[in-house]
Image (cartoon, rainbow, N blue to C red; front, side, top):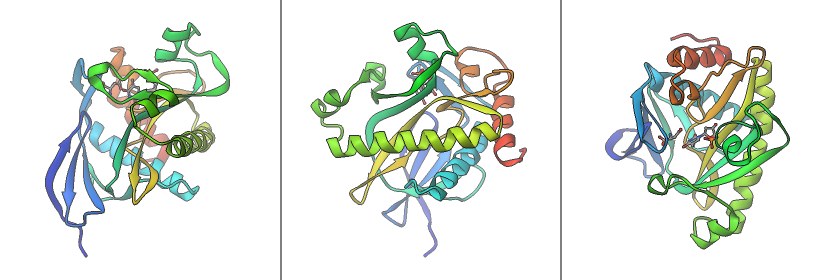
Length: 239
Ligand code: TMP
Ligand code: ASP
């Protein structure tokens, strides 16, 4: 059966989600819109939709090849991909290898400090509350996920970290930290959303130059160039 794109179900900050003629599948369109600080800062990054669609597809293919179950089915064109229709768990799972961003602010470790052990954090996905840091007790208090689901998310996030960190090292990129989202598909917790310079911190391994959305958040300039550089290092492609 040919998969057909039907009406829009939802528009997020970086992507639109459409129904398809198969209830198990959704059609996703990556936008150039960029936001930061829970939507308070708004802008666009040229060609971001195209770049993140490709980068995310590349990472999901890599993870699938290493046995991680994801929502990714296939890339259909420059800006669009087909994914499994999951029910998103409203928890953002962050893994950190090197201190940066909100961790540096919260606990005072200077940006760039190597963490002796990867740090795993949960945030409540709620812009109105400013995506607060939560723990597994809070997750159960809010009934966001069961203890078994929390265990799957935590173990998968740490496995994804190992896979991506090793892979990126070969591409001369340090994986500083990243955010994952999970969804429930046919009773199973699988990796969803995207993995891109919007959702990760990537630093050049030698120069420590930022190759991610911090260039937009902090007005560092050359934002699109940084995203292009990531795609080039991953796949050799230029767009
Ligand atoms: P943080 O240091 O601001 O908490 O960010 C940690 C990681 O999570 C970083 O790689 C950027 C990513 N992230 C998102 O993908 N979405 C968000 O809303 C935030 C705050 C961070
Ligand atoms: N994407 C998030 C927002 O707009 C924040 C971020 O990535 O910094 O709120």
